[in-house]
Image: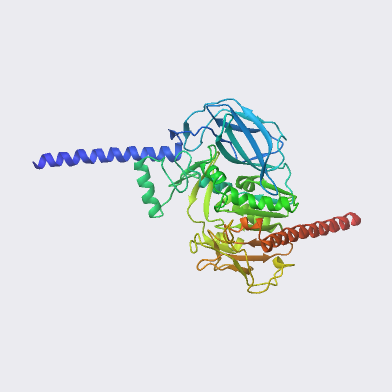
Length: 468
């Protein structure tokens, strides 16, 4: 009997070792070799673009799955709403259901727009069956200038991707990873264990492909307009404001900010609504722009909270919390969950600050109250002042019962860094007069500082010429 038990234990040990070896091999394959593929159920119609932003002078390729002939409506965000500016039609196109977990889909092109077919701006694309318009898929597209305007809006495209669970994988849901690997990943995340393989890969970090339809954006675009939005509809409010005020602007993606944005013409960079997911490159570029004397406004909340790695066609969340010591010195605040999904107005604490110039407020005045169409300006997710906040002035604080947003400003020689610390702030630009005027003051000050700096540089150049 003892020999039999020993044999059984030995066989069990061998099986466990083999299972562990297979699991480890799958784990390495999943994270290192990137060869994990799966079949995905496809809505009809459904679509994506390879990247969230295109230059206006380049071709724009749409990849669409549809069993029926389709109509494609390109709606540009203007002063009031998204309005149709271009229409195309396309034939049925059945695409592959196979999605690579790192690279996304590899669908054939379904519709191609020629260069300069669309004016720069933020677009909602509606793809619908010609014979049944109720069957449709909605998505966002950024069209950017070849040379940016003085005001640049950075759309929170990393956040769009992090909330997208198409194919069973987002930063908040994982229906794609096999169960043995999922259990190991859950344990590593619970104990905050991360392993770096070489210079490129982090274990527990799940890839989020960019080349896939975005279910979160689609759901946000077709939602009841009275519902709060931290994605597409929230971001559109800032664009409507800029269009209404006649302020020339350029919209870009997070990846564009990290890799492509030239500082030569830019005077103000605005981060919009929910700028949560940041890479090391983005942190470095922000430092650079501030050092160059370019003004920065975070009209957003939950800022810079998670750290990502840019891959070829994906992002990977490599840190669940960016260390506060990397964030607070830059923008003056840091996120925590106190006050999550509470909403209220702001209360002025420094009425003498230039952001309130021309606005009839005093200490204790309130602005950004909620109404029947939206929530209060301080809310959803809020950022607070922290140890290490040097050089920033608190100009207003939310009235939330806990965890209010802190609105802070740091005035530099020819520029500023301004943070509102709230996800629900941007939608208030539609109808709150104080917030609209405050935003005008930010733009005016940044452009005026840029003009003064340009004149100073011209004077220096003229002196140098005369000396020669």
